[in-house]
Image 1 (cartoon, protein in one colour):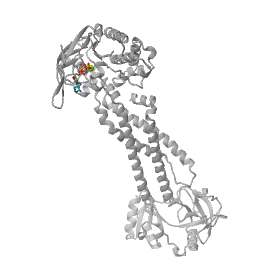
Image 2 (cartoon, chains in turn purple, red):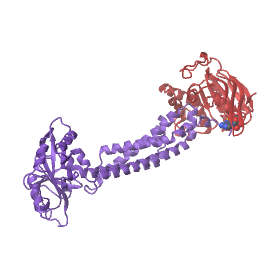
Image 3 (cartoon, chains in turn yellow, purple):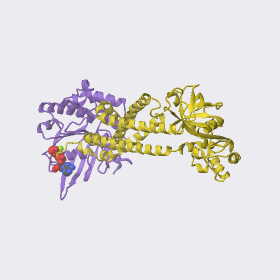
Image 4 (tube, protein in one colour):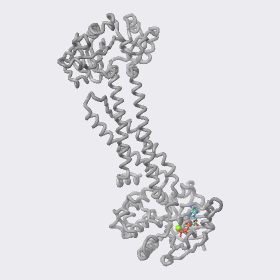
Length: 371
Length: 243
Ligand SMILES: Nc1ncnc2c1ncn2[C@@H]1O[C@H](COP(=O)(O)OP(=O)(O)OP(=O)(O)O)[C@@H](O)[C@H]1O
Ligand SMILES: [Mg+2]
């Protein structure tokens, strides 16, 4: 073991090529993961920010706000379900928003939420004609006190504050009271206008000690399957595109890890062939195959960890260098650690391909034979 | 297996029998046969040899006569096809690979024909490898390494890598490595063949002094009749047989 570490320290050049490739692979892995995290975050932020436990859609809606309708009668049924403490109406509509004095074609993509319940991070909803804006709009030049004109009807709303991490399907959210939301809706999409007290969906807060999934099930039972209820966490995952993004990226990440296995396997196989003589001598003076192979794995693990360390610094640098809002990159400690773990597993698996070769080295090869 | 050999469940006792307790090596009818495609090579043909505890034996004979094979079996590198091999009082005839690894680590020392030092370790570290592979005694091992390097005239070369040493110096490091585990028996396979005559003689003198001062047994394989004068006696081999 000590021998393996000394070799790494004394002959770093031998490991430079493999280390560089592993660093690039690690960076790719972290970048892909960060991109996935960023995309998911910008899709689901608004839903995750809701200060509720269960989200209730009408059953025909397929979990999409726009197709969902919840009438007051249905809401009353939900209110009566055991475990439901409070319900609140919510609705959303996507608009183009115009900043004052900007080019008429330069629109901000926003999602206007009208909700009866404030967010986790916000104590109270804004008043009539006012909205809270997602923080990403700051980078686009939106400031507190600014009046935005929403949709073709140019409904004015005043930005009175900002919220963090509340994007919806890649669009910045504006949070308003139900009345404001209804007014904007009426002015821009009369066809989508809902009657008073009708909402697209319901937010449910649980009575203490209730289980969200169980309550969701009971709600659908009580409404005779007129509703489709989800926990808020599950609702974030079922937003359009989220699972597809996850599946695609995870496949690419899987392929990248497989490439890492091949790189480690090839590199350490070559190294093992090169070292056959040395291994023979070490075995002849009493080294066990186990400790020789252990040294090999240790080298792979140290090399991978170093590579991941460099890649992590590069990934964080990249995150800082990329202007905010251009690419939804989100480098989190969890993602960096996950990438390290994947590559460590790849390193050990890659080394396993050399196990047989290490075991097979004959100590007799060390002693000067006549052949 | 009898208990006098100091055998325990896993092969042999923690501490090999003390030096001076009987011969360092007993080989009785040791045979090594390599099966070939349609014949077989008898590399060692019922060899008998006894090396006393502080004896230094020269092993001479023509190429292919089985000298290396005999040393490999005596040192636990090869298993005999049949026959009895006792090293330092431990009967290793039927030992498996794991037990033989321990024999090599604790009972014997090797000096190979081509110097096989670890290239990225200094002279001193090359000696300490033996300790790291084995029981890891730490400080005593470091003291022992320094003392050996001193005796071998390498004190000022302790921090040099093998690439920075001359052939003779490298061979001396290899001798030091073979002595690190305080073996019962050291096997030298043509230790001077890579050195010129004068240097070869100097190295042999050193080997003799080291062995005799420690009372360690040794077998020195050689083609060179002049080497034999440093040894207590010569054993001749031919066609796998000890004459
Ligand atoms: N692995 C092997 N497979 C088959 N035959 C072998 C093997 N190793 C050695 N031999 C044969 O066994 C015989 C003895 O070999 P050994 O190496 O012991 O000779 P040696 O006396 O050391 O020769 P030299 O002086 O040339 O080193 C030779 O005929 C050799 O070809
Ligand atoms: Mg030989």
